[in-house]
Length: 329
Image 1 (cartoon, rainbow, N blue to C red):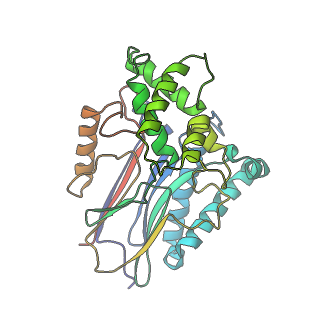
Image 2: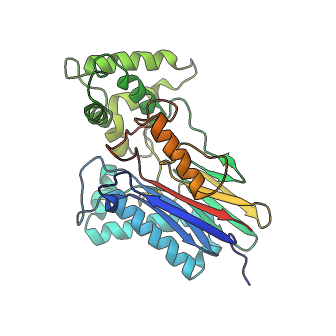
Image 3: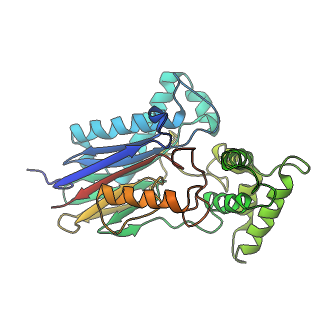
């Protein structure tokens, strides 16, 4: 009998907006004994819709079905990380072709659907874990996370958002209006002089630059500040603010992180999306949710200890979140 991922597992997937759970762009997959995955579709910022669905929703949904099908026929037991990446990108190209946008997506990165994926695959000698554009995972309570440099695109804009939130020009705004204003600013990038909130942006940018160490790659910082979130979505792979993901056109790109855990060499594996920013001491779904509740109480706007590039929705959360917890015994 083939060895499997775990003796038991649990999962959770919740949208950030309780009033519209069907818009959730995350997915969690638990297909014991062969596979488990967490998939984070990129949050829509361009307004593009296909059948009423965003590109992030379509990417996450297609990739979750892809993992389930590969677990059902057990082909996933033979794949390397590179093969998983290539097949996942091929799947999205097929989806573009069905929608009649394949050539447009090939030429224009902003037309592409994007998703981060972390997948655990049961194989002959152990569990292969492959991470593409996700915040990391925990193995026996130890966090394994790809390093993000100080000048990393998302880190720069997260820090800028914290500074803007507390700027004297923006601080008097009611929180919902402030959230909306900051979102628009971060999507567009540096505003032109004498446009609304240009002075607040300039003050925040000056503070951010002053806090960076001398060795920071200032060309990357400048690109992030000048072009914002939308600039990253439009970026090609050689661009300093390009953010790798499964998008249909990165077949040859290696995973951000890959490892093979031998059977018997772990007790728990936890896969999670960046909707979870507070990490619990224990390893059950209820523990993760309790920490999220604490983060919501202590930093509801995600501008403090649990800072994020996105703010919270009124009555909801700052992001969709998904989690899979695997127990070896």
